[in-house]
Image (cartoon, rainbow, N blue to C red; front, top):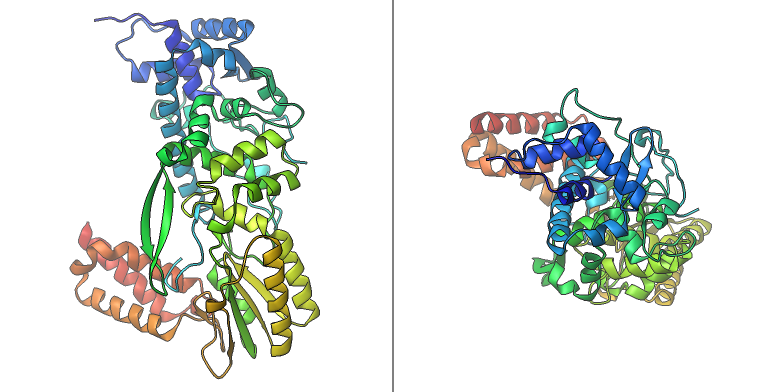
Length: 488
């Protein structure tokens, strides 16, 4: 039975894919509605899109490729049911393309959430031209910019020679500039600011959904507990899919511009608990200072202040702060929390780094774990005093129970790494890993369900410079291959 194409389906498909061309829309509809026959030809769909462009339902965001994005007027034109199905379809597609491309890039550090690891673990708003991701330089004090591919380029029907255009990347995904977003909006913000409606247009979802994140945040999180190293439990508020994808979008398209200090080693590509420990090797005194309740102590007001200080617009700062906080604090499960926490302490890191250097001491920070080391204990105590007072001025505090100074006579650890002579895993952990691989080599079939854990240990050990060419690493890799063969 043949079904007739409804014009609203064309507009709906465009809003799911945006930015999209007529060919993108036609291929998408044919893949999800094969019963619709005859399907309009590309030039006929282009005529529809061009007509809606003239009526103000679409904006043309790239002339040469004939790419269109929807306006606020188009959102109103779609029925409530179509808007809801659009939001759901688009957010799940955005989730897929981000996950796939991050996996390919190998850039996993930005997705880290939470606080410090265990010994086993782990001008603003500018620009109008499409950007080639390969050409983006990296500021060593900022997060690497990551552009999401267009949805239409990732769908199965687009594989092969039917590509309609290059995969053009825009500064705000659906739009090339603030000006173009404002042009598509209803009562847009002024200047370089973005309202909730403006932000929703850039992401490609309904303003009402973002409003739901802000006014009913508990509906968009799930809570669970994980054990702490020192006993007790840590509560994790994990965002559900819809708000999490929006947080990822905000992270990659807005917050990436926030600074990370060079002495901060948490949640950054190329840095880890090992790089955090290396500057403290073979020093007489090593002080460990813990920030008490780090993420929960960062309030919505503090996030707004941070964003305003970094030249974000007032409306955008408030909207982002409300989307990335829960119960007036940074949730430990949100992907935006690590970068915000690092940026919040940028000036603190700079102040303590300079003072430590003047005292001939070394300073690093990994999330809530601060380390100061050197050969004069009295100087370290002075730095700890400055750290305490500086944190208080920020609305944070030191956890005195976890503050300690270790000497060369005992075991000195930095974020779980022993640093007395070289940076190395603790002896207990090394013995545990050795025993695990010994048993896995003898009975590989019993470790089939633990192969990812074993591979994780191999990666962990390889992060230590002195272990890179170690013969045991090769043995461990061969054990993993042996188990993999048993599985297959």
